Length: 258
Length: 269
Image 1 (cartoon, each protein chain N blue to C red):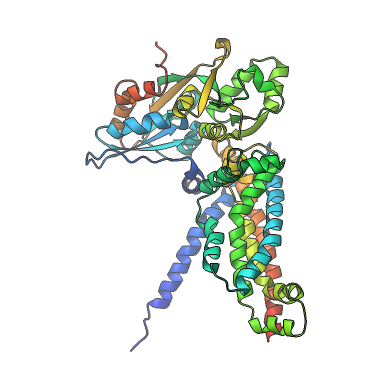
Image 2 (image 1 turned 45 degrees about the vertical axis):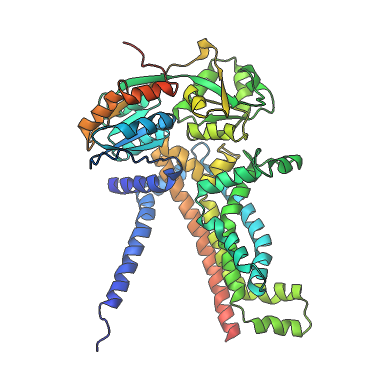
C-alpha cells in the first residue's frame, strides 16, 4: 500500500508537475556528486544563477509551490535540501521527522503586482472595484495563505468585494505573475521579488505597513538526504556566500535577527 | 532451419511488461482508496463541482470537435489537393505539443494581449478565466485525436461505394451522411473516445489559458492537483473517480463501437 503511494507520487512528479519544474544542471567542475534542492517557486531566479557556482556538487533544482514540494517529501520523495516560502511547512516536516532543524534564511514582502503600463489598479482599495480581474494563489500555497491573511484584516465588506473579483486561484506564484504579465489579469498578490524578476512588465504596489504579513523563508536538510554534508553546506550558503548575494539582488530581505 | 523459437515468448514478455507498467499505477489508485472513501471524497469541497465541470466542458468540446472535425476529416480523406500533406501535419501538430506550450500558444493567439485578442474582445467574447476558455483549451488539445482517426476511417471506405452512391444520383452531402458516416462509424467512435479521454484529462493548457477557479475553470485534474498538496487522500480518491468515469465512457463506446463493427463486417460480408 505504502509502496503503491510512493510509486504514484513518483508518477505524479513525472506527469503532473512537469509544468512547474525546472531542472537546472549546473557546475562543470567534473564532480559526480549531485545535490537535489527542492525550492519554492519564488526562489527560482535567485537560486538558478548562484547554484551553478556551488562547489562540490552539481545542483539540481526543482521549483514548485512549497506545499507541493512538502507533499512530495511526505510521499517519500527525498531531495537533499528543502527551501520553502514560509516557516510553517519546514516546521511541520521537522515535527514529522522528515526534515532536520530548519533555519530562516530570507524574508520577503507581499505586494500587489500590476502591469507596468495602463494599470487599472493603483491601490489596495481599487481591488474592490467591480470588474477588476484579480488572480491570487490557491489557499494551500504560501502566497495564497498570506493573501488571505492580508484580506482577512480588511473590513468584511471590502474583503468580500475583493474576493468576488478573484478570477483564478493559481497553484503557484508563477501562475499569478504569468497571468498579469500576459494581460489576462489586472492585478494579483505576489512577492516583491516576483515583481523584481518580471523586469519591465510589472510594477509593485506596496501594502500598508500594518497589513504586511511577516514572510520568512525556512529551509532545512531533508532527513535521509543522500548528500547531508553538501546539503548543509548549501544551506549555509543561503545566508553567507554567492547565493546570499543573489537572494539580496533578487529583492529578498535579510533573515530576521535573533 | 527452425524458426526462431525465442520470438513468441519475447512478444509475450513485452506484452506482460507493457500491461504491468500501464495498469499497476491505475490499480494503485483503487488499492489505496477504499470505495467508501471514494464516495466520501466526492463530498469534499469542490470535488463534485470539478467533476461536473469536467464532464460539461468535455461534452461541449467533443460536440464542437465532432461537428467541425467530421466534415474536415472527410475532405482530407477523399480529396487530393496541393498542400494536403502540409494541412494534415498542421492539424496533427497539437498532438506533439506539450500541454503547457498549448496553453501559452492559446494565450498568445486569443489571450487579451494575443494576436487575435483584440478581435475576440471586440466580439464581446471572454475566454480567459471563463468556462468557455476551458472548452477552447480542451478542443485545441483533443481535436487532432478525433480528426486523425476520422480521416483514417473515411480513407478505409472503398471509394467505389461512394462512387456508386453518386452514380445513383445521390447528392454528395447525402452520400456523406448516409454512406460515409455509417460506414466509418466505428472509427469515428474510437476517435471520439480518444478525444474525450484527452479532454477529460487535460491539465496544463487549461491551467495556463483559463486559470483555476472552483466551479468556473477548475476541472477535475486541476482539483486533483490542488488537493495533491493538502490532502493526498482526497487527491487519490478524486483521481480514482476520474479513472472510473473515463473507463466507463471508454467501455460504453467500445461496446457500441463493437456492435457497429460486427454489423459492418456482416454488411461487407
